[in-house]
Every structure is written in C-alpha cells, then in structure tokens.
Length: 487
Image (cartoon, rainbow, N blue to C red; front, side):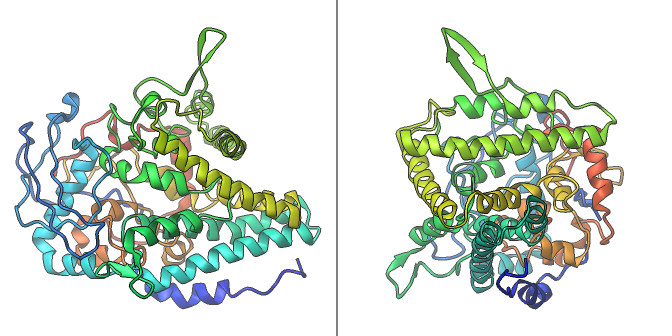
C-alpha cells in the first residue's frame, strides 16, 4: 500500500461537500394535502415545451390510457396544463403508456410546479453539473485505473484489495455511475448549449461519447444499462406488464422495458413469468440467477437473505464479465435473442472496447487489477456497505401512515446526513430524482428546501436498520401489487 501514488480524492471530496445543501430521514415522500381529481382512462395529450435549445429536450405526446385495471381505481391523476414545462428527455420507448408509479411522480411534479413554479423551473432549466461532475468523472476513473494497477503490481493480498475496494474504490465506482446517469438525463452538459468543443461537436454526440468511454475501466460497466434500460425505467417502474423478467429477455424492442428489473429481481417480488429461456435439446429451459437466489430467501431471516442476495448478485456480475467476452467474439448477446440488429451491434462494439481495456490491464498488472474493479463495482450494492441501504430500498412498497391516506408509495430516498449524500454523490435522493429527472446530482437536495412539505424532514436515517428491514421481509417492486397512494 505504501507504493500507492498520492491521491487528491479526499481534498476534492472536502471541496465539493458544500455543493450538497442537504438536511437529510428515510423519506417515503408523503403526498401533499392537496387532492387531485379521479383518474380517467380517456387519452390526453401533454405538450412538452423545450426549456433549452438542446436537442435532448423534445416535444412529444403521451397517453395515460391502459393503466393496469387492478390499480386504476386507486390512482388519482390531474389533467396537465397546456403550458407545463417538462425538461426530462422523453423515453425512447415507442409506447406512450406510463405506469401508476410513474403517474404518481408526474402528479407530484405538477403539484410542486403549481406551488413553486418559478424556483423549480429555474433550477431545472438552468442548472447542470457540468465542470464539477466532469472533473469528478475524470478523478473517479483515473483513481480506479491507478488503484487497479497498484493492486496488481504492489503484491497486495486479496484482503488488502478488498479493503481498497470498499473505500475508496466503491465510492469512485458509484460516482462514475451517478455522473454518467446525469449525462443520460441531459443535466451534465450546459442545457442551453447545443454544440461543444469549439462548436464542432453536437450535444448528443458528446453525450454518447461520455457515456461510452466514461464507463471504463470496469469489469462489466454501466453503459448498456444506461443506454438501453434507464429512461424506460422512469416510464415503466412497477408496471406488471413491462417489469417482468420474461418480458425483458423476450422483448424485440431495442430498449429494455424497465432496466432496473435486472437488479430488482435479486431482492424484490415481481409479477409475471421468469426469463431468460433457452432451447436445449428440443426442450425449453429457464435460467435465472436472480430468481433462483431470491427463491431461497426466508422471511424474518435478514442475515441469511443478505448472504443469499450478495451471493446471487456477485455471481451474476461475474457471469456478465464472462458474457462480455462471448459478445465481443461473436458479436451477439444471446440472452436477448429477439432484439434488433442495432442492439447487438452496440453491445458488440462496447464489449470489444471494454474487453480490450481489461486485457491491457491484465497484461500490465495481472488479474488482481480486475479483482479490484470487480469488487469496487459490486460491494457498494450489497450489505453491510452503507450505500446498499439506498440501493435496495429506492423502489419498495412502503405504506404512508401519515395524513397521505395510507396508500402505497413507490419511491423513497435515504437521508443519512451530509457525508452520506457526498459519499453516494446524491444517488440517495431517489424520490427527488424521479420527481425532477433533469435536476443535476448536486442540486437535488435543494428540492427539500424549496418544497419541504413534499419530503420528510430530518437527517437521522440509520442505514443498517434500513438494510435489516429490507432483508427481513421482501416487498413488491414499486407498489406493483398495491394501490398507489392518493395524491
């Protein structure tokens, strides 16, 4: 460890701490006291106005029809105003139906805009993470690369490598994910600028390049999930028709219907059939690492369930690394046989570049360099890592016991103090993010200051109690089997 090059990560972390204006409980984002009119199955058109000249903000139409019948009677919705400003990039899906959980966020957003429109509109239109986030992305990836090389060349033990992966490796990996996530939502680059680098590079081109190359070095990376599975997650979370393992693996759509289901299946209940399925010797065989692990959970056995979750999750991540090699060689991702050629070509392009980077690392520093990256990318997601608390509870089926009507709340945030928000780089503000997807990572905490009645007060979440509760009794994903709280 003494051979490790000096790093400026702690100084940088201290310097940016002031950017997180955070007064932080585990918020289940209760509804306001205002009541919205009953939900209607009639179609409506929402005009989305451009809030900036960016080509990522488009005018689209959306429909509220075809909401799950079993939930429709328990959902309340308000017709949108014609002049409502929405800066979130539209979902790439061809379907315009949004889930009950997505409608819940849409209604909250509308209520907040009605009450705090000028403040929220300015925050959403004008703010970007820009220089701060790009600097942190460079710091994170260079630190991960340097630490990986050190782990392979300094003759560190596996135990020492694991400690470095817990901190600072997992923090840098999570920062990389969050910054790329900002890039995807259009809140990384200046929102009022269409071209960059001396006016030669278009916004979309630069965003795609940052997403692609910014996800390296890694052993399985975040690129393909972000590119094909995250924007649809905002539209389809908790939808029983879209959020099933069978649907994800059998779909012929270029995008995943809800990419988060690939993670959620390890730790939450889902409706629908299981995938992926393979034809072997004339027989159809279903193979699901996540479902196999989750089926072995035992109610009120949090320690057992945490071990099962960690095992299935880490094993699946390891197999993804192996699958990248297969995709790089064959040019096809066989887990998704029905997806179009464009999907497989993009998978192959990314996997070939990523595998080449991993091969160079192995040649330079040996297998321990990849072990460090693997642990850095997985450990923040599993207990007892503190970041696991927000990861496993961001879309549960919590019930509001306050004055919100006792309905189910599909999204939550974890408020465990200013240092926790810095450590997770704002990922803990998950409900806030779904309310306003294009507010950048370092400004999400301001939503609680502008609209405090929409979020619970305090900063005293105990992350270990949160994890214990989550692993004691699994819930349905994003109120999939319950009525959404009345707004």
